[in-house]
Image 1 (cartoon, rainbow, N blue to C red):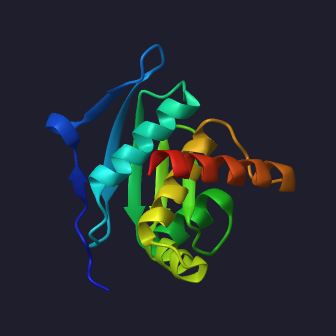
Image 2 (cartoon, helix red, strand yellow):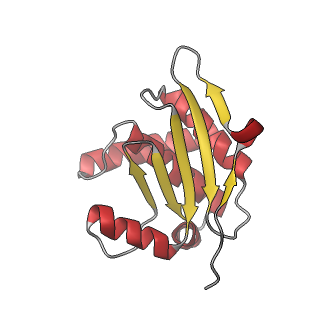
Image 3 (spheres, one colour):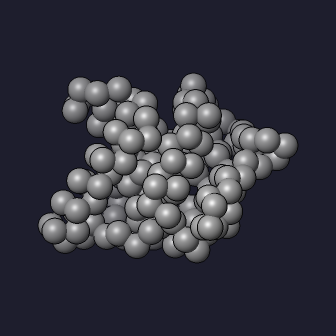
Length: 155
């Protein structure tokens, strides 16, 4: 596997800010750590719309990283004690990691586009930042229903 240097995408002169009216001003930093053609503009749009719709508070910046299997597996092992890759991880301090190869596998299995799967995973991560939890069956069902609704409204 070739090593890829991190390429940081800063929108609108180093950082993209979104004024959410009476809510927080949220800066989005999107880091693509994989050599793919994922659209930064698309991810920014999904993040902006989701934050606005759910009225996310408490974050001045959200960092979104698109990572490979190895990096995601290492993060999952270090922070969750699971020695396997996962699709998305969100951390309370405003970081969301999305595993691109896992997203591709899930999109293929479910038979929808990679773009839609990335939107679902990003929304899922933002919902975790908002305090939603999917560790119980009822919490999971609530999150899935909300992320489906948000996906339809944000794409």
